[in-house]
Length: 148
Length: 152
Figure (tube, rainbow over the protein chains, first blue to last red):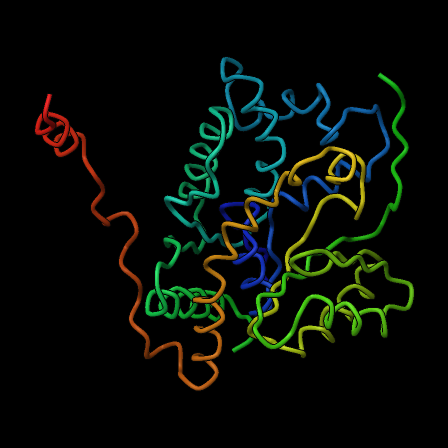
């Protein structure tokens, strides 16, 4: 069972596909759950404390805004941990503020840099594209050693 | 800053999203309650939120998925159900994150159709989708032409 990083990291479809075909999805919920369930100082709503931008320095330089570094403290460890990745390009779902946009760019860059199996797709716009989309993900995940 | 003591440590929370024309979230909720044993089940407009020990949650999800495998989808959630930091009962408006699910729910019928088709077809026989990086976009030159073509 491989750990598959999904992008957009909150995607329901990718998370479900990865679980359905026998692997473990790595998305934002996992990182947020870890923080929400760890005791420390209260920092609502996401328990992102001033420590996070410091941890983010591992993946982004010090002149990069703290918002990007803080977000990278969630995604960076997952990029290092993952065995494979699925990216959906041009996803409207991933639209956000400038902090999100720059983090998304950095995240995709780090995924593309890492030597591991990866697949890049777009959201389907009709049934034919939907079949190609799911078949491509199924083939990719089967090659990682999941369920046939 | 005050001290933070987390609740529900060691549990997992998962969304079950129902996009089916034969099964409703209420049907799925009743089935989940029947086998819930130690698991918290909350019904909402698009499906369920299930919280508990990972193996128990997975057991309930595996069982409810059988009701309509191609139309029931599952994803992880970071917060427990009804958490005041996320619940719309305390915040008002749609819960942050709902819009993402709302966006993907428009695509779910295509995914369900594909999953049903792949039950009878080999995925290897289906051509790969177009390379997403080669899909032509509206470039700035075309946009400039369109702007210039506008009547003053």
